[in-house]
Image 1 (cartoon, rainbow, N blue to C red):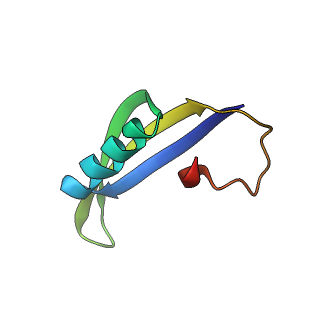
Image 2: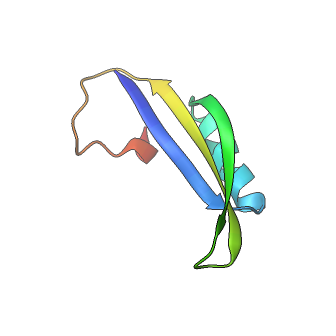
Image 3: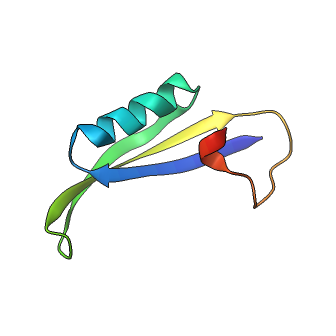
Length: 67
């Protein structure tokens, strides 16, 4: 099955660590990163889509972060 996740975080090293952790768990970058201003929180936010091929059959209750 093919899995998709969108990782997001404030524009700090925490975002880079989140993406790095996913890459080290076998996820691959998908598309370009994004960045936007969060007016409510008053901070910049970053996002990056990642994909992964995994064995099994997709089910909606699958915990994507645990893959």
